[in-house]
Length: 243
Image (cartoon, rainbow, N blue to C red):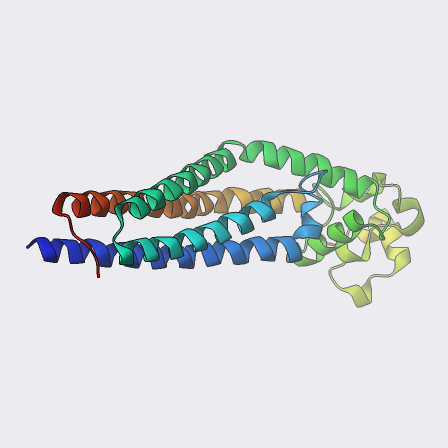
């Protein structure tokens, strides 16, 4: 009975360690994707460069390493290694819990920051700098125009010269420079919906999913901590050594 219980604990711990490695790889991939693919758009969310990609990448790499260490500690059957693994998991658990709660609590501040930064980018649009290119990218991908709608562009510094950007055009082949400078004609040539509404709606609709995934990952660390402590105590109590 004792051997069966020990075997089950070891098997569950190994499976969980492997699952944590997969989770770490996913976080690592998301961090790298954020850094190299989403970096331009982050200029519209914050006036300074975000450390979020580095945090995700570092957390993912740490979870992968901890998962490998957990497999090694479980196979070796050393109580001190299992206890150390539990400490590692507790640190990751607290970091993920704080990140999840902070993101959920401060989501309104994120939207306000996006509104301020995006409005500034529209007002100072020149079609060449990084923020201007990010604005064009958002408008093309989301099929939106301006902050609240296309009229946001009427007060931008670029409107008297070039009109509304071509990234707002519904049909680029039927959208001339003269059309984009004419406030009446442009209304029939560009997207009607503003980008702020689309982005904030996306944040609100997916915040529950993001929070759920974050807390789910954190919960898996909690299970790992429990199994590690249980296996460590079991080995100490029964003087069991893995061969």
